[in-house]
Image 1 (cartoon, rainbow, N blue to C red):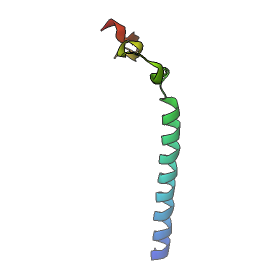
Image 2 (image 1 turned 180 degrees about the vertical axis):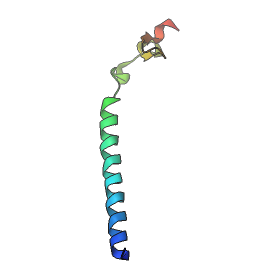
Image 3 (image 1 turned 30 degrees about the vertical axis):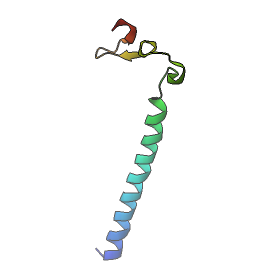
Length: 62
């Protein structure tokens, strides 16, 4: 293979990796947005968390 072809292939692979990383960043950041407004919380007990079994547990329990 000619060196220019190798460079073009590596550039295409790198660019597609960067595009994939950017898309994944935006998708994951919007899907993992908090469901509660943390700015209006008055204490830690206003929040809830998901336990290892997938159940939503209020921190008020603890």
